[in-house]
Amino acid sequence: MAAPSAAGVARRLRAWLPRLTQVRWSRYNPSFIEPEVNKELYQKPWEELSEEEKEKMELKAVQPIKAAPPSISSSVFSDPMISKFINMMMKDGNKILARSLMAQTLEAIKRKQLEKYHKAPEDEKETIECNPYVIFHQALKNCQPIIGLSSITKGGKTYQVPVPLKDNRKRFLAMKWLITECRENKNRRMLMPEKLSQELLQAFNNEGPIIKKKHVLHKMAEANRAYAHFRWW
Image (cartoon, rainbow, N blue to C red):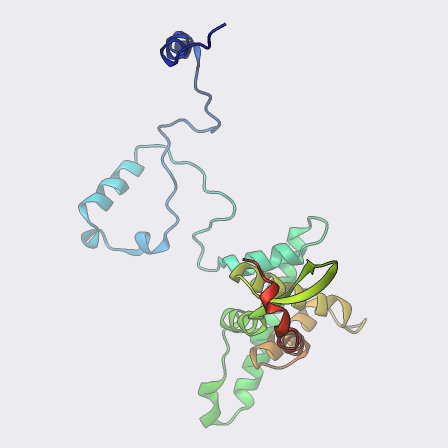
């Protein structure tokens, strides 16, 4: 039996196509528009808006808008990095407790820095950082390793090969080290916010066990640099 030609297949498909109906997986009607979470757009005066932006703002007054996803917020206190850290610190889905611990940690950092600020002489006060958000981001950046080790098997042997780390992996390792250090190496009577604030302040000053762990990883990668040619990518 001869194979059907391309024209015959197309003719048969054309007969079935009108019966196919498109399935809409969104719960919103196509008339709903996307939410705008850019804080700067709402702070602009009406006179500085362009014609296109004015038209969009007028359209939002009469057209329904989709609900913003929970991961997006227009709050001035919203920080995606702190939200990611809270999610990693959370246990058994208790996000309220994780948020409370993070808020207490930032408050403890603020109190410690303000106390240090008021005790410092006048010429040193300008060098003391009191913003806990800046301290958190800088401490996290200081904890991020540049290079890591990957297990690669060659000829029946497994080698620890130094490989450069992506940004996501760097952030993950820094957050994991901070949380593990606070959970495993803290005094029984010391609370989690107190220990976490202490570790963040030490990492902010490039001190503490997390910075030491990063240097140890870099030294191991330097010691295994002879196996770097085993990387195939």
